Image 1: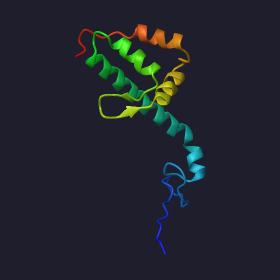
Image 2: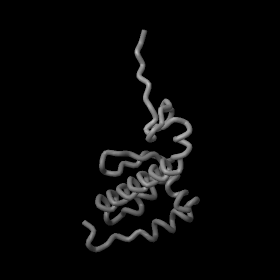
Image 3: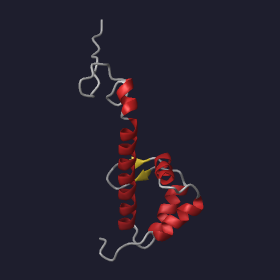
Image 4: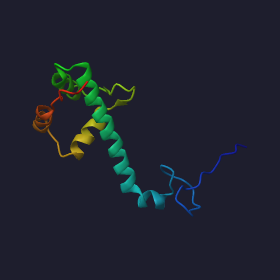
Length: 118
């Protein structure tokens, strides 16, 4: 006989069993927007670290490297050891309102490295 532990929902005063991300079904649905916003925020931070890492590694040709990485659908190494999938990057860009290659080109042409960036 195996002893499996039942985990209780992390919502205060809830005694239901956890089903998703630490919550019972009811409280997962209640907190869904907050959980999605947190996931987007973290993904956005990882994307920013990725761009900053590329700008530091390739200050003279960072735009070409970013274009190549995005178009090749490879994993993105952000320099901190974490990698992002192509789908995560596309999801972040879509959330920000960029849905096609023309939009991507507009983003890339607006990227500028500050003189104080090191």
